[in-house]
Image (cartoon, rainbow, N blue to C red; front, side):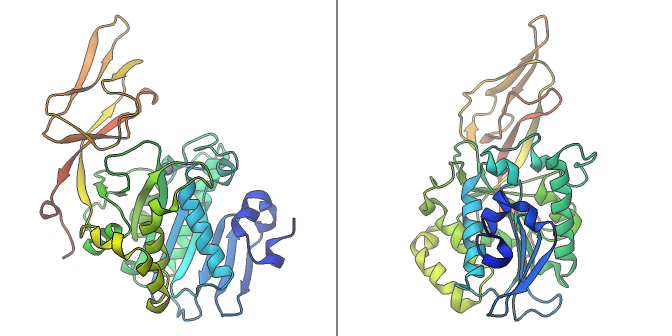
Amino acid sequence: MRDFSIDRKHFFSYSLQASEQFHQVQAFSLTNGTQVLVHAPGVIEFIPVSYRQGVGRHVLYSCGVHGNETAPIEICNEIVEAILSKKIIINARFMVQFANLPAMQSAQRFIQENMNRLFSGAHQPQTNNERQRAEQLEHHTRTFFANANDKSQCFHYDLHTAIRDAAYPRFAVYPYLHDKTYSYSQLEWLAQAGIDAVLLSESPTTTYSYYSSHDCGVHSFTVELGKVKPFGENNMADFALARSALFRLILPIDQAQPFAEAVFEERVKQPQIPVLFRISQSIVRSEADFKLHFSDDTPNFTMFQQGAVLASEYNIEGQCVNTFTAQQEQEAVVFPNANVAIGQRALLTVVPISIKDINVDV
Ligand SMILES: [Zn+2]
């Protein structure tokens, strides 16, 4: 195998298979003037020829925080290679992060620990590679956005695919904003990217999108683009709107046009903004004997009637000590997992909410 500094293509493959060549920063320019900075294995930045210090859009796509979530990795790889091969010329400062490379290589969600619980300092102590990588990614994200003058022009989309089916297959999590207002234009952008539903988080977390939202002050979302499939088996038509939106965000209008036309018919069917949900209950497992009262493969956002029993748990004598029920009409379950450690969240419930009920910047 040759190396990236000679080839100037196949950045993702080299990061995966010969990452040692990226332990020193590489910098070069393409013949069209785009500057390329490789900060670390899987971390690449592009600076457009039109860039003036701090001005304009600053865009970060991260993918593979969960190593087996392949579709976003394929889309990011396609964008990186399109820039390197000069098929497209970007007009935004742009970074791509292929996050958990060892997990991608072994087609696993993670090696030792769920990386999307390791941000905002949760990577301490640095006892494994995932913790070290989370800290390294935070560093590159912080530095990248620190160079931007206007945080309203800064965007981080942490791209995932869901493990299970969902009533809304494509959805995003809006990290907890504390006292900031929600961005209407971001909700519109998500709808254009094919996102059906947005879950409004109501407390601080240790996810990547909460880190960049809270610590870097930028627009940031966890975006679930559909269901997990192995590399090469994704039906890219399922991801057409997201792919198109991700390309268009970094391109000038004349170059963005073909990406918009290709999906125009699907795009006009999209509503103005996604369906919004807020969290109703966060159900924590506190006993060894914890049961969900619905099947393991129940899709995310499946709704239950008020009063329906969702979960129950039993003490060592076999007595039922906790029963969890749907407390409101149209209460839906998301991210159920009966096998979490005791003390961890086994299930969230959410309820639909109107845009009129939240603080939006319009
Ligand atoms: Zn994921």
